[in-house]
Image 1 (cartoon, rainbow, N blue to C red):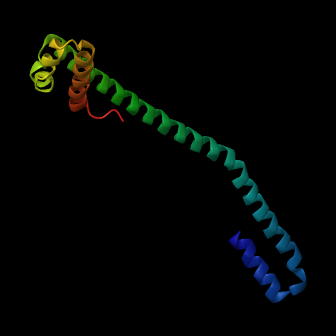
Image 2: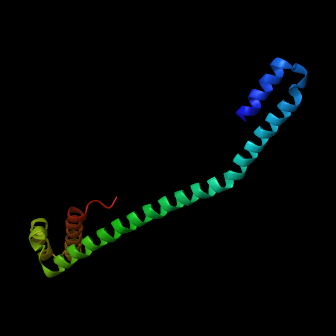
Image 3: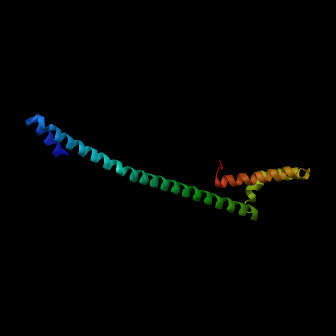
Length: 129
């Protein structure tokens, strides 16, 4: 390309009437370079798409792993609550509920107890929002 350009400037300097063939040769070189670049575009698009899809898969794997870890923590907390290991935390929130159960409002007691279990889970795992 550079050699053709130098030949064109030489032709313009020495014999201005002979510039046309050199100009056509330079134009053909640019057209061929343009065609090569255009032939590469599908390959570039495919590689870009592969890269984007790999990133998306990696992001989904990380989210899935985080969900599995949160699920395991929730199961562990629920097992501890079921075994009574978390009763000290639950007792602090449900101390006043026993008095209400004697008054016949057992549904309210159950709801508040379940709410307290969710509070303990949220403290252990974090917010679900």
